[in-house]
Amino acid sequence: MRYELKINNKIFYAEKGQRYIDIIENIQKNHPFPILAVKHNNNIKELNKEVEYSGNIDLLDTSTLDGFRIYQRGVLFLLYMALKDLYPEDKLYVHHAIGSGLYCELRNGKPSQKKLENLKKKMLEYVEKDLPFEKTTISKFRAMKIFNNVDLKDKASLFKYRKKDKVNIYICDKYFNYFYGYMPPSTKYTDKFDLISIEDGFVIIHPTPDCPDKLPKYKHYAKLSFAFNEYKEWLKILDVSTVGELNELITKGPNEVIELIRVSEALHEKKYAQIADEIIKRKNIKIVLIAGPSSSGKTTSAKRLALQLKVNGLKPIPISLDDYFVDREKTPKDENGNYDFESIYALNLELFNTHLQKLLNGEEIELPKFDFVHGRSLKSGKRIKIDDNQILIIEGIHGLNETLTESIPKEFKYKIYVSALTQMNLDSMNRITTTDTRLIRRIVRDFKFRGHSALATLKMWPSVRRGEDRNIFPYQEEADVMFNSNLIYELSVLKIFAEPLLLSVDNSNKEYSEAKRLLKFLDYFLPITELEEIPKKSIIREFIGRSTFKY
Image (cartoon, rainbow, N blue to C red; front, side, top):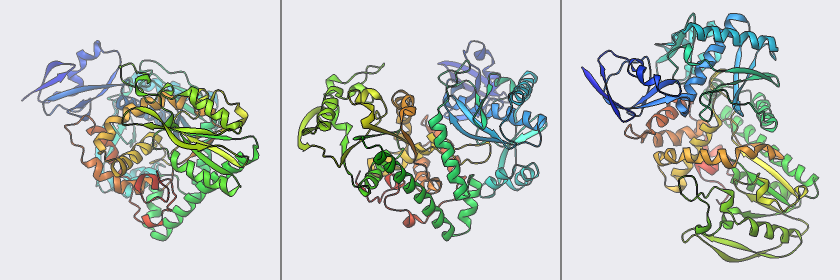
């Protein structure tokens, strides 16, 4: 049996029994980055797998998102092995991404610099030995017993409620572990990393898609870190920190689920009230700017904050940045010659700042109205002015960028960054990314309210992410406060809506592997069906519907 493979527009042949690693051996010599896996007819395949059919091959290295994820899992396995070897009584907890690093903590407290150096040295020894990561499939009940016996009860709890009877675990040297996703062929593939001490733990840094052949420079984001730590305290209140614990609670019945929903929503409401109180305390504030990435819940947050400001005697006036777009022919273009509607210069900054200045001076203005069909700015006929007890609320992706409101003194502005900063993880070493939560929210919302299929959303998502990297994330530390819009129960709700949409993506599309990954991810969650218990003003209603707010 002979298989024909198309790689980089060239034809290669594989004999029966040959592995992918054998096929790409010569390609790797001229490839700029280590190839960690391949995508064969839109299915991700580990390099040690045998080729079983013909088709198109895409190479996954650290310049790709899938390659980056595989590299990260390999580094985490190295760290786990080193910790078990040198400090067997300790335990690793992988928390969240921050900057270009991945924040982790150890059970025995903040590690000394010497401890981090020892761990890194041991990890590099494993790299030098070129130890294979070997996949084996066992029954989930045997896996649960194994992990219960080695102080990884959170992994056993994760498997307990999975529908599949089998589990893939990886073995390297004398150690075994479970990671949600694929692994590199061996330890030599993950030779670039560092451990940097911060706060109560440390960050792991390694090559990223933006910096695929070397270690990126780590920049710490103190406000973002504070927001994550605040949510960690919320998890203590809710007494849930992993998906296994969430599933355990769901099986106890609707009363437990309803209480979880109520407390989660109450924590959100309390935070909105605290933000409103802070705005009132700063007596000069006349403009509240709310920004955040896609599907972060900005619009609902703006509306709920407005309610809390009304409780404090203020009358908020919303202004939409969408109405301040320049005429289409004046819109800047991106590197591909396409209109860049996400650029801050797609907005009429001069008119916007002039209007803000007039409003702050007590003058009346006429708001513009943008005609999206013809790409023209029109007069709306709607005139506004602000009195002493009124305040402007402006929601949009550029809210944190000082260029947007450069003519307005900082003492008149209050900036809020909103994002779904997921803190609950699958288990102690498999985290839930903020990006995945937002993507699943968007898939559900785009289908329900915009008529877009899951495939359409997956196709546009990389472009959305590039826009966020340019226009939002660089300014997040400019915020006066960060609001974490994540709800601990939301993925168990979104699962019900997202799964059938993702199942519609077939393997003729390059997005198939991403749809398959998200389906596998959602499979870990038991569903929450008590939808009537979710408040009508909840963030999650922005995505699943039946909100009390108009969007």
